[in-house]
Image 1 (tube, rainbow, N blue to C red):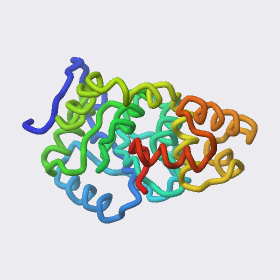
Image 2: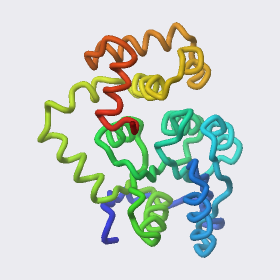
Image 3: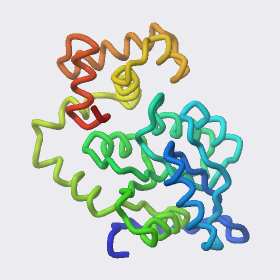
Image 4: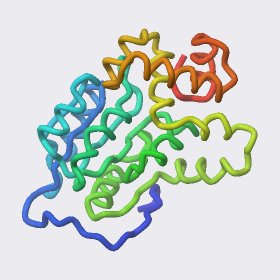
Amino acid sequence: MNDLSCDYGGVRSKWVNRPNSIVIVDDHRLVAEGISSLLETVPDLEVVAHVYDPAEIISKIRDHKPDIVLCDLDMPGGDPLDSASQAIESLPDTRLLILSAYPTDVNIERALKIGVAGFITKNESAETIVDGLHAVAAGHAIYSDEVRQRFVNRTDRPDNAPAILALSPRELTVTLLAAQGMTTPQIAKTVYRSTKTVDKQISSAMAKTGCTNRVDLSRWAIREGLMRA
């Protein structure tokens, strides 16, 4: 593979007599359906469901129990990374592979904190995406070279890192949702937490990032690449 870096763990998929099942999480139907069409020609990979609405991520993943969740990171109205990671907590055989157009430092850091099986950028070739799915199905960790390089370079820019690294995965999630304009009750419903807990997490995120209010926190999220303006 020319465009991917792969860490081999020596583990092969336990399901050798059936295709590896895949749930695609992406609000862009053209992307999701394009990947599905591509994988129709690959006998050992099978798309069993698409998720276009972030509110359906947890239920669809738990219903289908796929071998791999191929997940975008940018979906209005939710945090697909957080929802997908919640969904697979009770599915030890399901691996999470990120496919994103935005390999920002924050997105890479969040993915690594959660423990994804890999992170591929959307500018990779179709062949590379298939190779990445095969690698993850075989138990390997897979990253686009761009992702790996950006992660390595973070150690050369310590001034950028502390605020991002200080936030827990949950604090990053509520920050993202608050930056999307969600109210505390809306965030609480999305992440299945109480409003009191959400307020506490937002306050903690503001303290760690040096923000004084939600507007500042939204600007920080945009500036750090957690979301688009």
